[in-house]
Length: 117
Image (tube, rainbow, N blue to C red; front, side, top):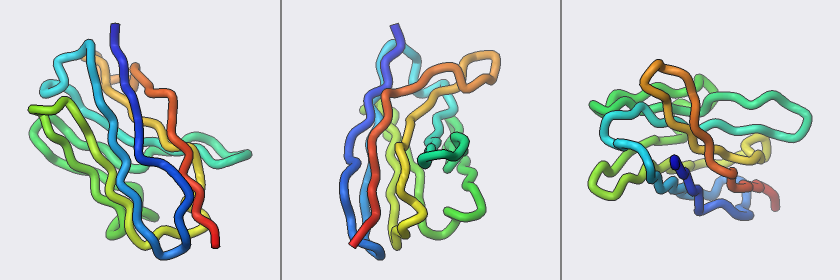
């Protein structure tokens, strides 16, 4: 079965950095578009960034320039480097994989990121 396991969340001060990782299994990772979503308390889940099998990336406007998504197909892992973190970046961050039909069909359990002094 498909498993996506996130790691790397935690508590960081405003202006700090974190790197999230998501290890995938049960899918042909190199063929899948991968993404990071986040959900803050009381808000809808929103797409943060995505990366295609060929490495093309897309970012939500509010994260552009601060966050970088990347992938290592040899390790079946997708990363999210987050810099210049703000309090409003506090959320649970989820890794997701697209199905062959193009839906965001597979999800990890999420990792908490808290930005606070």
